[in-house]
Image (cartoon, rainbow, N blue to C red; front, side, top):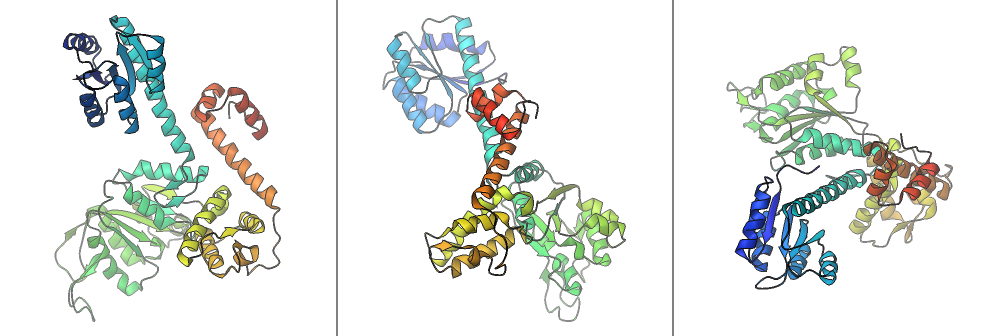
Length: 452
């Protein structure tokens, strides 16, 4: 668990004592620095961010306890071991209160220092790992996305995995799920994040103009081309070019796009000089492109060039546990825009949100909530405000619907923690910060076992 080399800061005002500790630690292969005062220790620790600090208590300017308080106030997470010749129970208690992980007395043997340091580093590594795992399992925001469901966690992980590469990404999903948002997330999470992000909707541009929109054109290239136009491939520079609704490209333009991907070069319409493509290409569609290939309506070679990594954005009906937090976020935004702070959903509106199938996905949810925020007569948004087009639709019992969603979300969260821990209930309980007995009871209620 512990890295073979750690960064250790020795805070010691006696040169001979500092050299003894340095020699012992150097034999273990660690990287060592020394500070002789409290002020120097604080400055060095904040600049260097050591893995562990051996902190003397008696320092020339202020105590090691004061140095610890200042470091904790700055959010430093180094493992601190208090080292002093003035050992007492009171010192030990105060050291732990200020955040020390252990306490050793001078003079110390190499074995004692080695074991203490090893334990401190292992504890720090475990705390860091648990914090990272908890963040991964529970995050409900990611580059504009909102949702903590298992389906969305998978999307987040895929984006993180592919962002740093140069691979083409092919994003699929129904209309309104957030395909452009996913493309932006791939861009922002990548080393290209500070470069341009250019999105082109292939379905919104007339076919006879689409080639010019993608590649640009020279003056006089066709009737009406009064001046040179820079296309999307060129405007994207070293950033990212999103070709949305890629299924709408005709065969002629598909062939040119294939050449662009293979040669990384292109011509403006009417141009004679080839230009390099520096941008990453991301394509998106709500169509079944593989089926279109089988039907002869889309080039198979282009499809396989585009779909190096496929990222599917799930429809809202596959992640119903995200509906409440999405609706709340949309309402907060809409109410602020309309100057109607304090708006809330009535219980029957919450139930209706959960019962609805959302064929229009997140886009439909946002539109319905925004309209309701503008038109609601009172401080509560009613079911009729959200669904005026469905006056006779059956309503789901509020508590039953909410309970089912919460149970499903809780079961999935516990299942993923157990999976991460290899089915070990004790390890999962520590990760969830609950007792083993509480976890067993929760697993029984949710129908889970240690092997799930």
